[in-house]
Length: 331
Picture 1 (tube, rainbow, N blue to C red):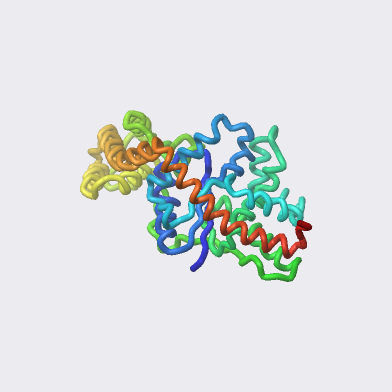
Picture 2: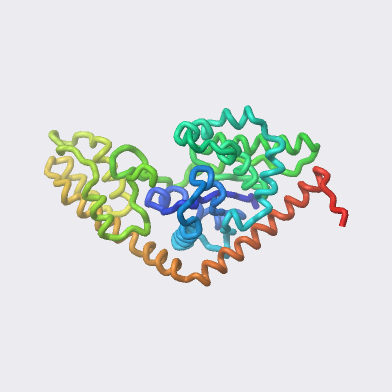
């Protein structure tokens, strides 16, 4: 059975774009593959070296993924910092990672421009830590977005380089997990600027209150309305219809589509309906998030069991790597 490894950002909160993108596919993966999902709290320090409340952020993300359907009985879900074998492999891989190749990575150059006052060593070696996350479980498949494709390619490079340098076949060469043929929906943001994202400020969080959802949706960007029958919808309006497609009943979508096509649509009515449909969709998830967040014993068990399963896999790999390199104990 192929092994899948994927990181989860530790800075929450999950939004509708995450849910209809990665999360739904994570749920499918756990039924088809051996899966390791980790909350990447080490990675978060590359851009937020002094987090206000790292523990609470991690707890929220863990609760959200569990509420969405990640099953700790099927998948190994763990917190990156609970597995000390990862930073040790990261250290060892750094010995065979070169300054030039790390400085050329797009993610490093972009982040260095965005945070010139915080170009730290962790930011430079981010691809090495990502490689350690992946190959420590001898992953075959890694689900990645466009922004992480180069880092995955570097993980492939480090895996092959280790095998070549020590004349072994320790690490498989991980490849991208493609969602081709899957029911993928690109969820747009409310500002009409593209996909939904927390950093863009155009997202609706799964745990967001109904009052906040209504305010955000009513402020969504629109235009003056259609001037001709059956005219094409501009992007800012199509965004609202795309959201409606995933949270509203088909007859509701058809009603507003007809109103748009015959130029009788009232955007205020559309937004009110969309807001209520989003609230109805997120209510069960929000309820589960709140319930799980309050159950500290359950979260502790999940984190502990996940760490134990992840460490069992990671320690086998690290033991093998240490022996290959030549580390031997004298006691």
